[in-house]
Length: 118
Length: 109
Image 1: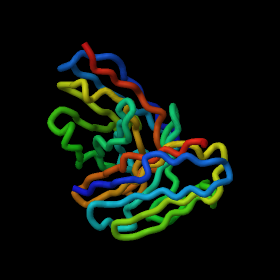
Image 2 (image 1 turned 60 degrees about the horizontal axis):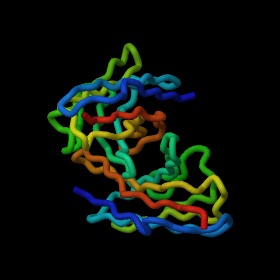
Image 3 (image 1 turned 180 degrees about the vertical axis):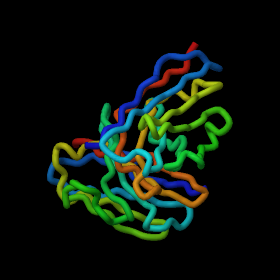
Image 4 (image 1 turned 90 degrees about the vertical axis):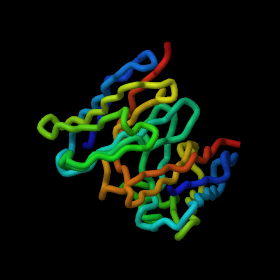
């Protein structure tokens, strides 16, 4: 059974940093691209970032480019999102998602809440 | 950048009704790269339809997808109580960029 479990969310001040983790199990992690998708309070889903299976290629939404860094450790079956220079607009539930044949997301985690507030 | 516009914003229906949800793209989208998701509060989103019309594993056949180019539709033939949720369309382009529509809420009338 595929499982994706996010952790690392919490309350952080504007300008601060946070690192999210996503522990994956139930599939060969190193064979799949992985992504982060977020949902701000009362809003819809927003793609944040994707990393290829090897970790060599990474992609970002314009809203987070230059502030967020996606990475992975295939030996630990874990996906990461380093978030710097956080803003109030980054407040959201952050979901980890497995890419299936790259363009779509076939499994999602339950999400971790990030609140940026003073 | 492709923008996906979903309509209506909210659909008020009763169990047993037919639901028709629309997703319109600002420019032509490859059908291969159009998907639909169901999202309930406090739960992980769930892939329903991929390739515009193929059902994901375990998805009941009351869910169907259709369309091409800029106009896509998700149809739920007979609403079950567990189908009341928010539905999102999503597309992928070769930038690469992944884009979601703003969602349609299907609520109990």
